[in-house]
Image (cartoon, rainbow, N blue to C red; front, side):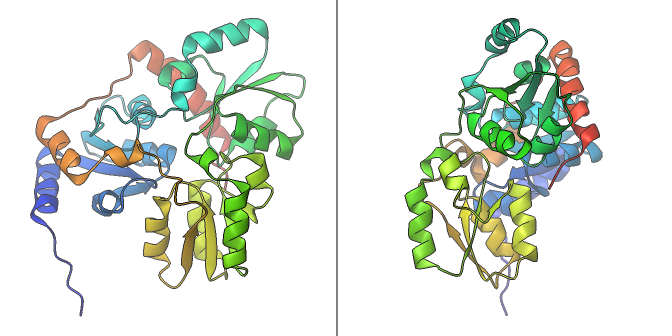
Length: 309
C-alpha cells in the first residue's frame, strides 16, 4: 500500500501556514507540487472568491500579479502575498490604463469589456470584466446599440465575436503561451490519437479553435474531463493543467496539444518560494483603495451576470 510521505519542506510550509493564519491558492497552471500543497486550486477569479469566503488573514497566491491584484480587490482586509514578485502576465502588460483611456476617447460612449487577465488600473477604467468562461454571456448582456471595446486579448475577443455576432473593437493583445499552440500541433496529435477529443482554451488562435471539439476555460476543461466518456483528451492550454486533470481522472489519458505551451511566469513559483513568502511575509500586493473601488465595480457587474461554463 502506498504511503504518502510529507517532505520537511512541505511540513515547514504547513506549520507556518497555521502560524500565519494563511491559506494557499494555486492556479491550474502552477507546478504540480505547488498545486498539491494548496488549499484551493482553480482559475484566478474562482480562487479570489474562495479567498474572500475564508477566515484566513493571509492569502498566498500562487499565480501571477494580476491574480493577486484581483484577490486584493475582493479581499481588502486580507494580506495578499505573491511568492515571486516577478511573476507577471505579458498579456496583462500589453495594455495600460492610459492606453485604454485614449481608446475610450476615440470611441466615446463605447462599453469596455475587460478580461480579468489585466491590471487593476485597467479594470478600473472598464465598464465590466469577464472571464474566459463567461465572456460570451457578458457580451450578450450589453445593449446592442452600444459599441464594444474588448481588452486585452484579441483572440478571446475574436472567439466571443464569433459566438455572439457582435462587432467589437479588439485590443491587439495576446497570450504568448497560447499562441505557441499551432494548427499543425492539433493535427499531429489527432493523427496519433484518432479517438481523442480536442479541448482548447479560447485564448488560442482562431485556426486552432476551428479544430477543437470543445472550447473551454480551465474550469470548463476540469468539468469536461470528469463528465466525458472519452478516454483520451488532447488539451490545448498551458501544460500545468495536465497535473490536475490526471490526478482526478486517473483512468483517462491527457495529451498536451503542444509541449511548448509552458508559461514561464507561472512556473516561477516553487515550494521554496512559498515558504520564503510565509517566512518573510513578502511580496505583498495591495491595490490602492481608489483604484480598488472602481475596479470592483467592473468585477461586481460581471459576477451579477454569472460565471458561465
